[in-house]
Image 1 (cartoon, rainbow, N blue to C red):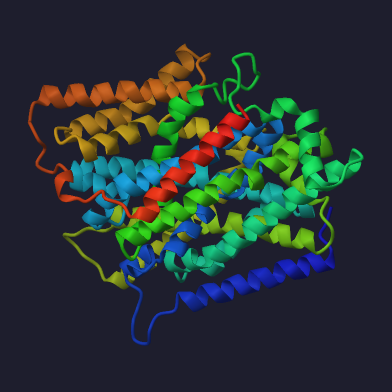
Image 2: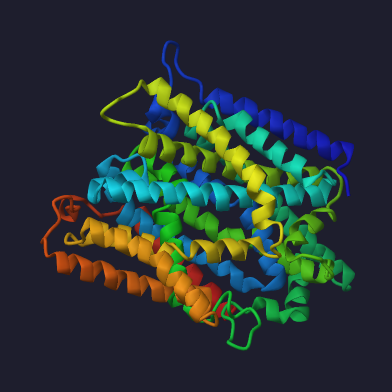
Length: 523
């Protein structure tokens, strides 16, 4: 179903406005050229509201909206654990990890690894992250985004990917992280409003179709007619237990997945590294945590509603786009703009992170320094190349998957245990050696592949938890065998303050209470 003239007009206004605002906020004073700090870390000028909005805008993209709605359609509310547990994970990151990163004044996560371990660890992890960002994350954002555009407008998927890439470049390539972060507040407002409105329309339509009235009736009817979709903790008898293995979701591998994603992922943590101050960064993280509590209403509930409204979908990932076709003219354009906002924001954030890691970790050579303007130019070129490569490989990698979100989680789960061990022990155990960290990181892939093929019946999230424990053992054993004592590059946590403000502490308690209420209600 194509968009009406009114829908297209709403969308075009959004595109033009976003590009204009991006150029306005990223302009420099007369006579000042952007340096690497300006381009990659926004000159360490981001306020809390921009940090919080940018964290969510970077996170909520096609893979979340389309993928998690698809998972909601197929699995149900249990998939919301990724969102709700992320809220608490963010508070942990803000209290214990961010103070260390800001104290070290780093640009990238690989840079921290070199400061703590050695250049080998930095190079290996930089290459790894570039591969994942280009061949997993960027491809997923482009493919699922183009799939949504194809479902809603009929535009060919290839042309959809080209449009998304060009739009992303148009508003972010010049300004870098500053353009991305300061426009993300607009993206998040649009995403939140559009998503909530789509959920409202879906629930209201369910009520009307079943002789009720209003969203409360709609939700009750949905919960009554599809009760299996409202189980937060899946039983072993569930056909989806392998994806979300019951109580393990609360106490097992999902913690490792979330800590890796929110704490040690350049794509996400980069906006907190650009904070004006530690307190400002922590306020931004708390803001993002509360927004995460809201996300299941926006990205999961529509998928569950689609079970009643469009029950015979060919693929689960078509749930969200198909619901959008139920929207009235004009409002469909607004929700379409919200969806595209999420996609291009994530594209812009991802390409900026790719450019940052390549330029600062692999290209920059302190023995042969270049001008700051040169590094900015290299970053822009890398952003373009990454997008082009992702466009070419998107269909071969993702075209055959029914649920791309679950594919992404399982693939990244091969490596996240080692990453968490590498950073966690690197920050909080002084005896961890460079070899130990490297063996743990590489061992993560080896152990994961071994379990995948030798014990395929183990749910991937349980496998993540088991591999994490094995990687900890590897790192500890290797460090003790080398017997070097405290590493000369060890982080001195005694010199870093982990104290947080009263507002941050109250926010943490509130999030814990809200999460407890959610899980008790839908256990």
